[in-house]
Amino acid sequence: MAIWEKVRSEFIDVIEWPEQGESEGPDADAGATLVWRFPRQGNAIKMGAQLTVRPGQWAVFVNEGRIADGFGPGRYVLETRNLPFLTSLLSLPYGFESPFKAEVVFVATRQFTNLKWGTRHPVLVRDRELGPVRLRGFGTYALQVRDPAQLMREVTGSQPHFNIEGISEQLRNLIVTRLADLLGESEHPVLELAANYDELAGELGQRLAQEVEGYGLAFTSLLIENLSLPPEVEAALDRRNQIALSGDLQAFTTYQAGIAMEKAAANPGGEAAAGVGMGIGLAMAQRLAGTAAASGPPAAAPGAGAWPGAGTPARHYHLLAGQQQLGPYTAEQLLVLRDQGQLTAASLLWHPGLETWQRAADLPELAVLLQAPPPPPPIPPAVPEP
Image (cartoon, rainbow, N blue to C red):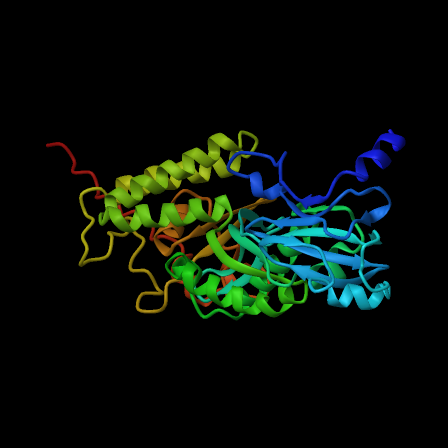
């Protein structure tokens, strides 16, 4: 084989890169060749050889590790007037007829499209409405070589073959890191990010431009396809929207009862949670059925009286039943729990604003709620029979 290559080199006088054998399909550019060195026995190139550079390519001559000359698309006959810098490096005699030693490296300068990026781990951001949330994102970008010599110096080096996969991981890390900074500084609420994908992508591209320029590259396109919340957060938002769309307190109550029974079925070992959840759902449905109205509060249980916290900001309480944390419960639901014997003065409760769990009897707003119910009415004396 070595003898054949030597003989073959004596006749080959056309230097070109046909770019054959590239992968095909929608993601073909993900593994496409970026840099390719022309194979030549001993790197001996004859004077007068023809160099063909196709559109979307750039040919670079390298002599002893130094970039000598470069050629854009076109057809060239290699002679002294075409290779002035290489001629000075080699110090060849006048006439330049003998073969010279140089590597010819082709660089693809076309656009590489449909390259994908995505977050491996969620990005933690703080939202004004939802609080701390985790976001995942993904999208696509298009890449192009703007400075072939810079690419060879900083990235590919002396490798005879270099494809997009060799740099895509570094680019993905850059995109995700700068995206995390951008989301952390963004004033857009999480629920409005979808309406600002173009604006965010433009800002992200500007932040990345200088860094990728150092590799001799440029992003010709950068798209954010999706920024998504965790599935459980999306499910909670869907539930909230369903409640808001119901516009009916009775429908809301029925929905809450269904959720309680669903949780009980998913936790067969939690008898306390199941009993409380089903009891609240059924009791609330009975208590509020037929009395719900948008302009008035729900009717209280017999003997319960008015809620002592009326007119103050609504609170949601968490109840500790055994080793299980239940809730959150509204004021009306606490009345039901009291009637069912699930809430007593010794029950431990917590609501936002408290540092630790406290006994129900120690919470001032529950004093009226936990008062002993009035005794049964007196029985009228029996009337003697005549």
